[in-house]
Image (cartoon, rainbow, N blue to C red; front, side, top):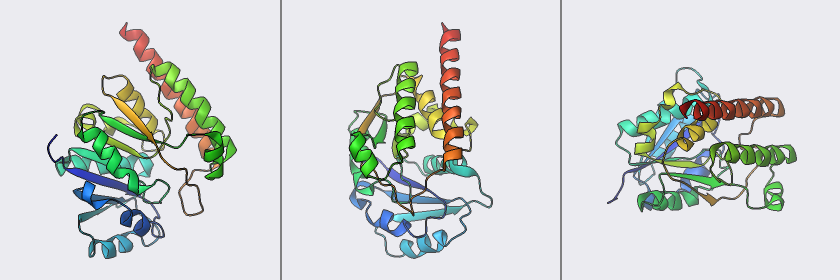
Length: 245
């Protein structure tokens, strides 16, 4: 691919305190545009974005929902707008600084050079590193068990299914009808199972673990609901495979 158009999309909700750090760490030489979609934040996320827009070497577009659509709903808007803007590669980066923006260039290179169609950032390099990075023990255990189960069900061998740092070639997002997926956190799982049922190539690289006060993270109750939803999605994937035979 010659000079792909790369758009970094940032699904934002109450990210005022971390947005600037996130944006300033993005390797601008690797991207064409930035797109922030604000899910009706209750803080100054949009004001911070508007201030940043004046001093960035790349275009920063800001789109604000008129009602809160949820994590999955926000991503749907991100991908739809990025495709409309002609993106060849779309990188999804949380603006809460939980994932290292400096790694964006590697996601872009692996897809742009034709090795993969989808790239994931895996936070699981070792149990010690994950826990020292602040990942709660129950989330680490659930992540490992769910990822193992999802790999068995899908036939893939991904090191982590539950990362929030992802990149897609546009043909993936054009082939997957993501508009029908959940507006909640299980959206990410639905995306991967939909991709796992195709011939698209999925790669992953390690990313540092960052859990801190300002970084978004769902609580124990929502984590349990997310885990159960993930198992349900895996069973749906299995049933589709069975009935296709």
